[in-house]
Amino acid sequence: MSVSSVERKKKIIDEINRTGKVKVVDLAGFFQVSTETIRRDLDGLEESGLLKRVYGGAIKTTYKIEPPFSQRAGVHLQEKIRIGHKAAALVSDGDAIVIDVGTTTLEFARALKQKKELTIFTNSIPVASVIMEALNNHELTGELILLGGSVNPTQRSTSGPLTISVLHQFHIDKAFISVGGISLKNGVSDYDLDESYVSKEMIEASNDTIVLADHSKIGNQAFSKICSIDKIDVIVSDQVMPESWCHDPAVKALKWIVADENC
Image (cartoon, rainbow, N blue to C red; front, side, top):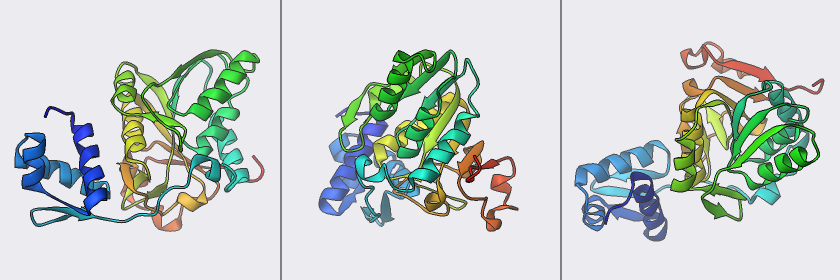
């Protein structure tokens, strides 16, 4: 069986969710790869918080499940609107930007009116709809590129190898990333494995990475690690940086922007 590393890891997670555990030897035989390859896969998945390594294999770990997109849209809505407007000020006319999936990035997309000659990539169907309407109404100008791939109807997103292969073809100015959690120890994380892989590729393809995170995300850890905090250039939040973070070397170069009620 010849599958990519991403597909192999996805199948491992599917199996561990189904049975609660996996064995290195069994997986190596199934995928027809070496046991060392499987161990590296399991180590990487454990680092992302997706399983717990045990002798000879791995077992399931539990995290809370993210609610559907429609249920999250109204949670902390005013904070998300302020964050979206503050983040939109970081976009310059002519920028190539990529916007990932999230209710906060949706508010960011709504705040992009009056921008000119943008190239906008996204794997979010709601974001694409907002941008398309703004283009049709001449509220902004530029080009919209919807990243194709497998559709997740619950989260209204696309992901998978097709999505990632398109990202590999471009050099992007700024990535705007919505997250499930962000902490000093565990970095930036989200709940969906497939969407996390796409977010990682967005960050790799971009010169600057801007994370949009309301107060409920600060200090929390979600299901799947996207990157360490030192990979982030800017955080836009409705709260100030936690005092315990201020002198940590990981955030030395990080710019923290507060979207307060006066925005």
